[in-house]
Amino acid sequence: MNPLDDTHDPALKTWVESGNDPVTEFPIQNLPFGRFRTKDAPGSIRIGVAIGNQILDLAAAGLIDTDDMNTLMAASPDERRRLRLSISTFLRGNGANVKAHACLVAQSDVEMTLPCRIGDYTDFYTSIHHATTVGKQFRPENPLLPNYKWVPIGYHGRASSIGVSGESFPRPNGQIKPADTDTPKVGPTRRLDYELELGVFIGTPNERGEAVSMENAQAHIFGMALFNDWTARDIQPWEYQPLGPFLSKNFASTLSPWIVTTEALAPFRTAFVRPAGDPPPLPYLDSAANREAGAFDIQLEVWLQTPKMRETGHSGERLVSSNFNGAYWTAAQMVAHHTVNGCNLQSGDLLGTGTLSGPEAHQAGSLLELSEGGRKPIRLANGETRTFLEDGDCIILRGYCEREGLRRIGFGECRGTVLPARTHC
Ligand code: CA
Image 1: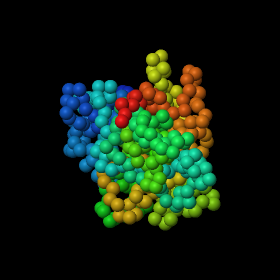
Image 2: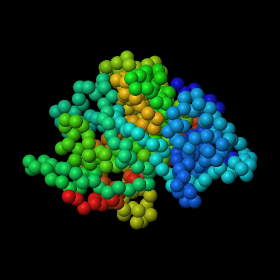
Image 3: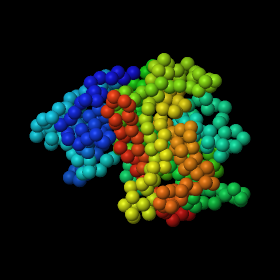
């Protein structure tokens, strides 16, 4: 597990003034990793750590000797802790010299890229509330399939269409079969949805053939970011049987640019509890450490900004809030299950948690749940309504951790905008 050390001390201050702002998501206790490029050198992708409204360029500061994030992520947990300590030490105190200041870049002056090369992407389904509500819509007679409480369900997604916060993408076309006809048609989705997820990044890889035990699983996780797994709800039901999600899911997914590390999240671990009467996980998915502190208390929010809101300077309306701590499977269980057959995970691989809906209706992580399958439009404060997303809509995911006696840390934003469909076939 990740013991707390002096990098978590809530009293720590940095010489980067904005890093001490009480409302910053990036105080010195956070130190999330990302990649960026500047206008002066657009060809060069740099590795940095967010501090206040600035970025510390790690190579310029002499703190790393690689320009490859995936190599950095592959480091052992001890090496990662040492790097965190050296970054924290570099940023501490009041009086930085001119040379240290020269290693900072304003976040407003850079373009963030994806935080690493994502070789493979797997999406899980860890919210039993999401699985049950969605299951009811697809199979009213049999909402939660019998394997759910035994198997961390997942499918292999597509990495090429994952983009970074700030992106926009066209409404996808696809094959849709209306309920009242026998033949499908092709055209733009009318039921475009978001999914509120976290993306779990693999750090240390495992060899092919080598299963990662629950005792070691957490050590393979580099950190987490916000993840929006956009979904076309009218393409999905027609295509998903018998092999699972396909084109309803792989046209776009959006990640926040900063990976909040396992080390930064350590103070926000919490007990993993199964509801009474549910089967305990099989031994390969169970450990004392997982029961005691395998879950993470990460508060999550979904915000919607419609084009009308944008025109009037309105920054958006919060639709829901939820929390990762209610998930039926932990991040460590996702890793242990993914590798039980000897599948090798590589540095930079992304494991989506699945839509993180909570038990209450207002904690739903998708419009499919919020609008009850499109039957109940959501009324927004400005009088607009939505069942699914319209062209120009921007979805913003936010996430943060807070606990009494600790510095609050945040994930930044994961923002994506829907463009009109391209001319279709
Ligand atoms: Ca998903």
